[in-house]
Amino acid sequence: MTLQQALLQGTKLLEEASVAAPRLTAEVLLCHALRCERPVLYAHPERELREVEWIHYGRYLHERLQGKPTQYITHRQEFFGRSFLVTPDVLIPRPETELVVETAMSIGRGVSRILDVGSGSGALAVTLQLETRSEVVGSDISAPALAVAAENARKLAAHVSFVRCDLMSAIADRSMEMIVSNPPYVPLGDRAGLQREVRDYEPKVALFAGPTGFEIYERLVAGAARVLRPRGWLILELGYNSRERVRGMLGDCWGDVRVTPDLAGIPRVLAARIRS
Image (cartoon, rainbow, N blue to C red; front, side, top):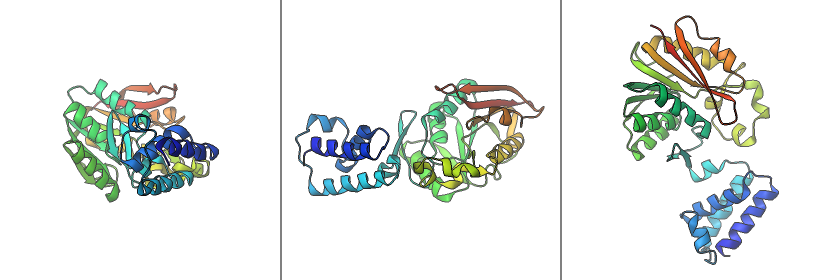
């Protein structure tokens, strides 16, 4: 079978199964099987697949048809122009989370110490360290997630320290100038309505906050008041329709509240500065 035939066959299978972006997915999976970049598929469409390549491609297609996210098959996801390792131990970084980085860089010029709470793959911590050259610490409750984050930091030459703890419980008082987080914010009752790729494959500890979906936000706001230095910033990614509830958690000690929408116009990132 040639590359062109394999690509057409994979696209057809994915399309019939209503998998999103079937052509692109087939290209990515075929490239992963061949250990090549996408231009190769079109530069040499007549090239015959070796048996081992066909076996790998077939397995990857089967996994995707069963609902496994492409990123967990290829173990790669791009974030802020860099390729990150991802495994089922970490949430797949989303494009909208790049807004957290952009917000931090915009309002936090000159910040020297940043904490990323719930680091997961380390996408936020690694990116912020490389973009700002600040001292960055990442925390996570999951040891396997921290192993992935540490590998991403090593691979991308980012100088990030990682700490295993529940949110910021191991972080010293008044030690940070900025805290960023993309926390779990899905209510437990919404589990059945999630896409199967999310519901069945992404880590539950990174998705579900509790019965209301706001439990982690409440703890983050309280913890940030302890950990931030005076005039320090807290930057949170927001779940759908959560702006007013999260904003209402900020008491009198918070000011300069800013909310940034994503490209769809949905309020996506909340930033607030502690007064003292």
